[in-house]
Image 1 (cartoon, one colour):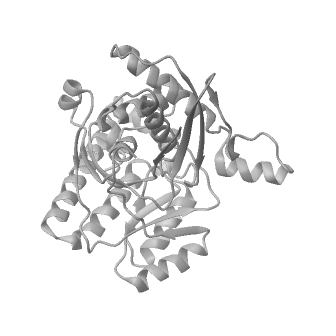
Image 2 (cartoon, rainbow, N blue to C red):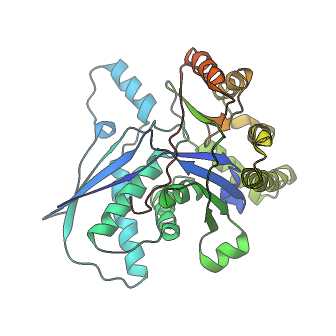
Length: 339
């Protein structure tokens, strides 16, 4: 029997990057793209390579193109970290698993290293499949913690929780990372929410850029731990923007949503200006000049925002395509957590 499990890219709608600093965020996943894994029983444990793991190239231009797209590290390390962290999770909780082995392979068409949580999606799908193979139940909040631990502890990838939470729940989620709550329960206070009809979202991402989030996260962490007043105030404001977004969705006051989204990015520009590249900033400017709102979906390379109507969406597509940016209407997932 082959077990197949999926996970999807994440768009941080509001509040990021406060999720790593006891803040509040709202995020959703969308199935325009996906990461999938297939697992089946075999005599030994094996991880199969995908296109981003290959070490042969047609020429230097091909090498340059693929490293720009995928970076220097492939997906095999993500699968290995997933398996090891699952074992550690079971060991720490006294969960006995059957002595059997598997082969695991993956595929992903999620645009890579552009703030869409593509690596987290691969790990989420992998741990879902491994947990099913060994008949271990992993509630969404705990699954998100295991995925984060695989990235942060095993692979030293700087990250906050929100990507994994949205992917684990497979639903738009309002997340409150209150320090006292997290200290008590080990995870944040998560609430599934509905995205009301009548709000037009788009997601846009660069097709010629691959960036990591390490620089942004390391600088913010240093400033936060040093209690830099501007950074502490920004974390509180990002959390406040999230509360306002949630209230606007509930009350139907959709007209204020674009300004909340724009403020999220503008605040990032004030606090993290040195970590925003000229190309990423230009992408936001083009979207706003078309009349849309815009902020990063993560740490750069992709943006999310709202548009008013079909004419504005067509203008977005036209203007951004000239800058090497693809634009999609996200198909927001509200599906089965076990997917």
